[in-house]
Length: 94
Image (cartoon, rainbow, N blue to C red; front, top):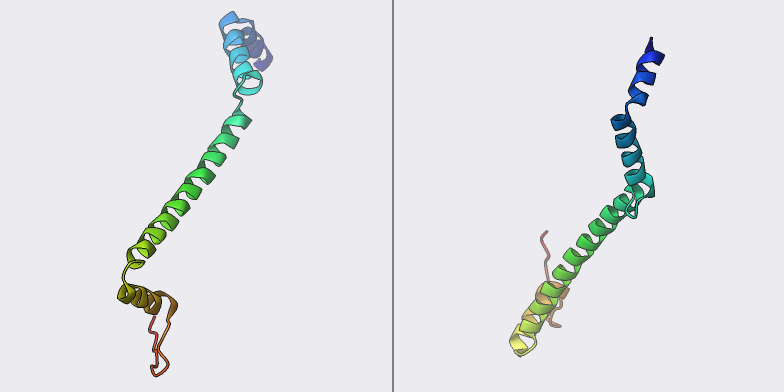
């Protein structure tokens, strides 16, 4: 009974055409499913790298703000690198 249904289904030229089309697109076309998945993964990595570079760029821009003034350089060094003068004690609270 199932075999008769399958044979009847396979004899339909439209079904065969659609199946052949999907097989061709999935495996033999220029952009296959595997290439598409690899591209998606590559895009995700590139987006993460762009976000990282944007963050680094913002950090560098913040450092450039402190470049001109000696007081601001000292403030930046104390806040970010925990530098101190010789007669000071630093307490760090997280």
